[in-house]
Image 1 (tube, rainbow, N blue to C red):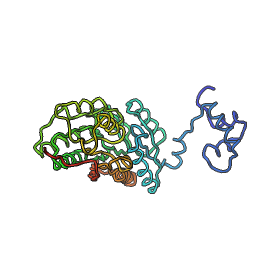
Image 2 (cartoon, helix red, strand yellow):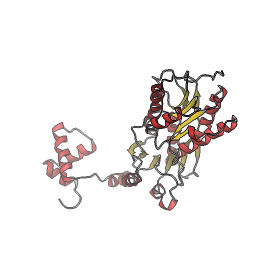
Image 3 (cartoon, rainbow, N blue to C red):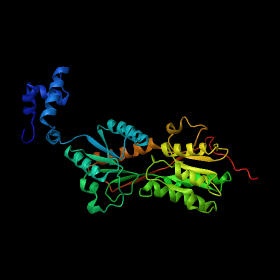
Image 4 (cartoon, helix red, strand yellow):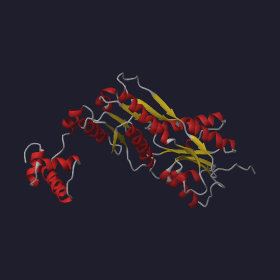
Length: 339
C-alpha cells in the first residue's frame, strides 16, 4: 500500500465499517473482542498510525504531558512517575512515559514523538549535560519544561536534589563517630548528582579536618554498575576505610557482597550510610542508616511547576527548587573504638 494508510484503508482490510474502526481505535462504544482483533490485525497489516494532531486540533488541547527519563526500570524514577502522574491527573492532565536508555538519539526521537502528538509540556531527566543551547533538543522543542536533577541550559524549571548538603551531613555524622577513613561510592561525574555528591564529600572532610584520599573515592558510570573490583582494592589498602557512603540498589549491594566475602561484618568492621529510599533498604540487615531521597516531594514539585506553567497565561521566569535529603539513623554505623 502506497502513502499513509487511512481509517478507510483499515476498514476495508478488516471488512468492517469506518464507524466500527473508530469505536475500536478510540475505545468508544461497544466493540466485541472479535471485532477488536480484526481491526488490530488490519492496523498492523496496513501500517496505520492515528493522526493525533488532527484530533487535538478539534479541541486545541491534548491535556497530556511527556515524562522522559533514562530507564523506568529504575525504582527511583518509577516512584517519581507514580506521584507526578497522580498530581497531574488531579489537574486534568495525563502523563505519558518514555525511556531514553541514556541515548541522545533516542531522546531526540522521543521529543519529536511528543511534539507530533501535541503534548503540552515535558518533564525530563536529560541524558546529557553541557549541550549548547543552539544544539539542545529540549530548547528546540519549544514546550514548557521541567528538568529533573540535571544542569541543562534551557528556559525550563529545574528540580534539584541537594546531594551536596546530604553527603556532607553523612560525612560529618560518620566523623562524629570517630571515623577518619571514609569512602564514597557514587554515580558518574558526567552528571550533576555525581559532581554534587563529590563536592559534598569533600566539604564534609574539610569541615571535619580530614584528608581527602582519592583511593577512597569510586564514581561509577551508573548506579547499576558493579563496584566489586573497586571495593576489593579499597579493602587491600594499608589503611582501609572504616566507613562508606554509597548510592543504593545494585551498587551498594555489590559493595556489601564484597565486604562479606572478605569476612568483614557491618557495622563491626565497616560502617555504611546508604543513599536511596526506605523501600530499597527495607530488608537490609542490619537496618541501614540512610540518606533518604524525598522522591514524593520531587514529584510533587515537578508536577506543580508544570501545572503552573500550563494553567498560567503569563509564562513565569524559570524557577529552581532544591529538595533536601533526610538522614535516617539505623544500625549500620558504629563508633570507632581506639585501641
